[in-house]
Length: 497
Ligand code: TXE
Image 1 (cartoon, rainbow, N blue to C red):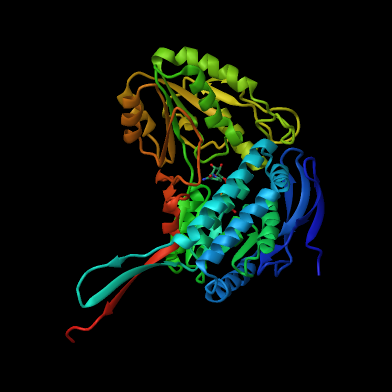
Image 2: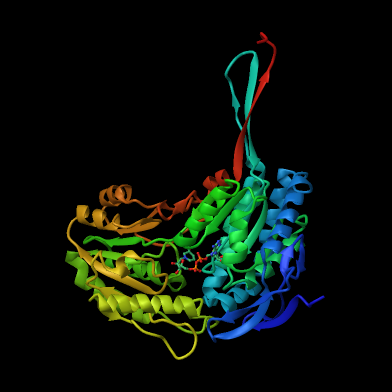
């Protein structure tokens, strides 16, 4: 039997035991084929450790565990007990904030301050859905005096959940929170780039006292384990966050297998609009945060910046200065804002987009190259004089790169803002309430921020219009993704047919 723990060290939490197996039935186990893959530290480009690689056979085992728990122990767990378990898990995450955050920084490259923020959001999300667990209610519907009708909101069953690497722990919490609160069981596949924090989290799942099989966390590749989840006949629902390309594949696999329910949270190319009457200093600050937060690796990143002609020059000069002040470097340094991109592949993709911006004639205001010599670091980059047909204005770059363009009228910017296949988020900076409401109503986006950016909260639904996704995460809205309505009609007497 292989040792499925390895001793690792982080600059913040010191030495800890990192699990490396698949978490199935509350135990860490080797994959059936005993395959493993290497995990790379994006700051140093060195291998951190290897973890188990799940194959189709392991997905089968995890699904069987989740099915047994769904039919057995979890069904017998009352809603109030589910609530207590989720809140206990939140408490354990809070207690282990430094450990979880530092594993996240080590593996993903995000700064330790952002990683601590992520853990805080995980805690809030789990507590919030813990609060919902015993408030899932049906209705009585009065139809006829000799009948009694009511509805029940029942869990869907075994849920497959596939998450990306940009917010490894937070995406996990967003997905398991509503799924477990409503009585489902889960097979979660974390991203191959960032498997470590999910496995540390798995230890806390066991410590919190969840019955075996309720939450299984497996590590592996999308094309193998992810595809096996999407096509599995024993999975009743699949929830996916990732690229639009793979989102389509997940939906196709769901359709051609057992028509499992599908929710998708996909990419974005969100417009961030600055009007002439905006508080420019505040707008600069939010635009900077909107694009460079999490190194631009946000599905809702404000990557298309439209500035009205009266303040264009002033805004561009101030924004350039601000972007150049962002601290890029070692994620474990307390003042770092931007660490490395997650992987060599992402680094190369982003650099190719930067090159395409240069080739298509946009102006590089700042950045446009590598930062430092080692690690996947990219300079905060601003392109100005960008037109809507350019690749950098249309495609999701998912890095610290934004495109600025000038506009004249409100109608113009609404048309430009909506000229995208995506519709995840948008923002408006103005002091005029009428403008704020009119434009936010007109934009095709699932979230609109006014005079701020990236302020997500577990109480507020989040999700995409158009090709940015299907369904909503967070808030009460997410519960609908994980329940199905049963109508019950009881005859109280009356005539026979
Ligand atoms: O995403 P993938 P990648 C966007 C962003 C980024 C691009 C590529 O633009 O540059 O996608 O990133 C699993 N069946 N977003 O390649 O491949 C995979 O293992 C089932 C936006 O990393 O979509 C991982 O767990 N699953 C996004 C997850 O899908 C499959 C966040 C995401 O990987 C699979 C991430 C398959 N065939 C990237 N192939 C957001 N919305 O926030 C892969 N996966």
